[in-house]
Length: 125
Image 1 (cartoon, rainbow, N blue to C red):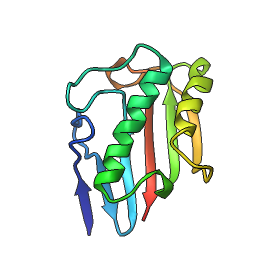
Image 2 (cartoon, one colour):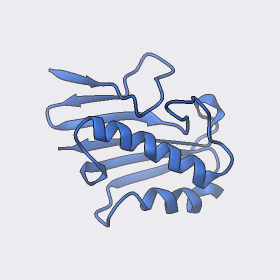
Image 3 (cartoon, rainbow, N blue to C red):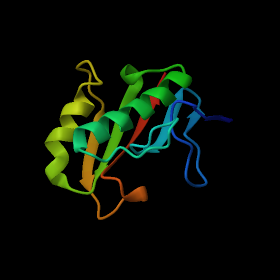
Image 4 (cartoon, rainbow, N blue to C red):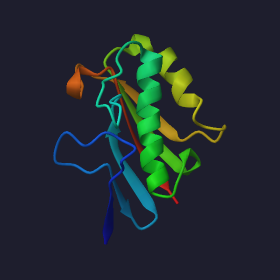
């Protein structure tokens, strides 16, 4: 059995997917972009601000599932420009306390809504 997690602390999905799916004690969170959950505004002014909004969206979903970033075991970061890696990495890293999850960062040619950063995570309770 799986439980669908829907959060008011993250922007509504733009397609046929859920914010997250909880299966047993494992939470699979769909890729999040820098869209503000209440205003719908896309935050694209710079890589740090964009990444902060992405991480806040992930935080909202984790919170609604009864978890936080200490539960994150795996993440995937998609960038449209690897030149933003340092800025994204700085903000991303600030959400963890040293026990960093496994991760890969890949450059892609395009992301939904023409954003520059998308991040998905897997967390275990």
